Length: 244
Image 1 (cartoon, one colour):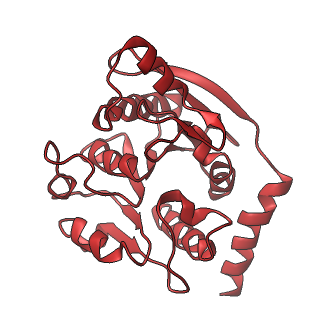
Image 2 (cartoon, helix red, strand yellow; image 1 turned 30 degrees about the vertical axis):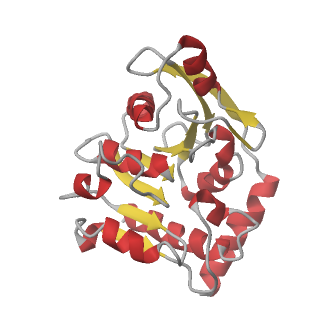
């Protein structure tokens, strides 16, 4: 395990000395709503991870996380979905535009922004993208990924049934054939096993920490979470499998 500890050290502390500049961009969603995102790049030829925030959030949720994910050999794009408000003092510009224009900001309508983000990232270098979601956006990322040839895999932190009775994620996951990493707290774990029961075993990794209770969504990756290192290590192993 020594090599893994060294890798985790590089992820958590190496980023302090090699922070990557980010670029704010916009692209159009499928109903002509302008979507704001931030790009974190090391090599434009590397594939992209699309980062989607939790309920009430913004792209600011990933300001620290994205810079650590760069060390896995991917670029990142953190997206403001239309359903949100603020994270880490970063306002959700897409949500503000939707409100000003009278466009629906419901949770499920954010799928339009996710699909537009997939197209935007894919056509930057024509490589399959990874989707990384937290809470409701994790569920929408799974739905958007199913059967989509532009998506390679999904990282889902604390997904759930946010859209009942209109949409059941458990049902959407039948015959889900892409690799998926599911992160949960200890409390959420039994629920996650049931939610992903329809996903073939060989395609899924459902993780809970063993040295603490964990946390909800991307909070489990933050310094305030006592088991953050466990989550990062399992993510690292998942990314390594994707490149095998």
